[in-house]
Image 1 (cartoon, rainbow, N blue to C red):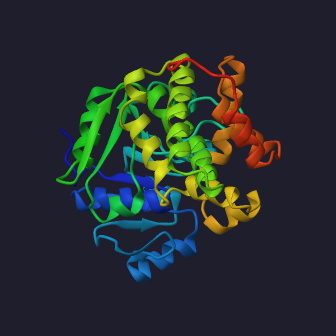
Image 2 (image 1 turned 90 degrees about the vertical axis):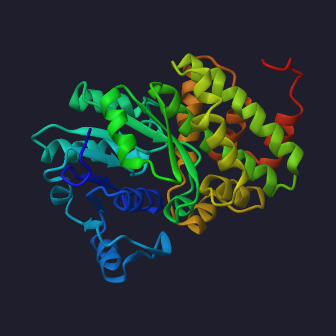
Length: 336
């Protein structure tokens, strides 16, 4: 089993979730490196001992090493955790390949798919690195609660049993629990589509529809997740578990979710541009909406909830009209 001190791990991405995971890893005794592309951001973190921009008032462990040099961060590191936006995942892989000459094992916590194609991020890893040990972390986790040590559970899906066991050793403690899975497709897809549905849940609340409508939207959104997810090779137990239903409920019902807040603002009348500016971080669900829409179209799967959200974001449809069309659709048998 891996020795945490003599085998460092690099975390790429010093946003809220990347920083929270780096804090967890460092506190668990891992020799942990954290990288951000913005040198000023890293300098401020070094000077203040906190990530003022994304996790203010949460101290960084003294053992956590901070880097603005990509090359130095991954030097002599075998295990790399990527926590960048999904649209820059390919760029992260290219930079790793440029600087790494030895063995590498990759895990990512990016909740999205490949832009434009909708391919799984796993496919990008295989194309660039071949059949290396790999995994994906996803589940109902807000960065702030993770960083302060609130009880949290997450799913780790991997195609390599030893890597999964060693990553679990790095992550688990008295307040952080890891559920293992071999369903990389299901875990990746669940993490993407829940962002889309969360935008819809936020819109419904912004329009003043109430709890009944939000619950109906979550339930029918889960049905769409399962319907398309199984077509893509995912397992139903994944979609009814932590990385599916668990993450979906959390993201749709709590205002710590950027995707929910984005939808909430639109429902209250804000423009797409203003809603994004006010949040100030990447709203993954905007790109995920197009990715899921294209996948549903290519696989000929009916996805009325996701279709409505796509129409609002990409076709400029009025949210009130889209909601009315969604709620007045023809009756369906439960389970269809």
